Image 1 (tube, rainbow, N blue to C red):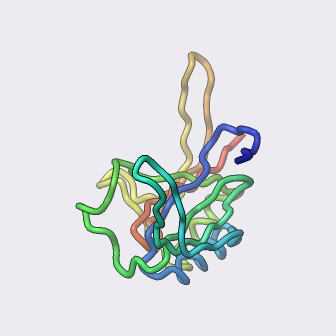
Image 2: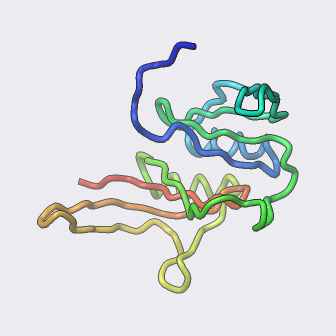
Length: 157
């Protein structure tokens, strides 16, 4: 087995799609993602021998070497018991938060609020860290077609 050179970073985020075609279309329209691979099974070999996972996946590239795996055929949102982990949201860098937010809403996303504090619509933030360093950004939050929470992030100089 050969491996590619190591590059740290996120490889992929997996989403179980209620409607795979709509989900793929959403990420293509809003973020310019492209389907780069598809597969219907994964064959593995582990401590219990060889096994096959019957998965139907569409791999979308959202940035160089960063992917969304859309699991096809879930048919319905996962119940709380089926959900794994404690991930609140994932963040995608975008060139224009306001434009991407509007495009996401037009493509079926809904605003994702932070209680009564903020409705999730585009807002500017300034965060001071490491003494004098300041990070300025513009962010917004939307809920995608499958309940995934997406932070839209734009660095501001």
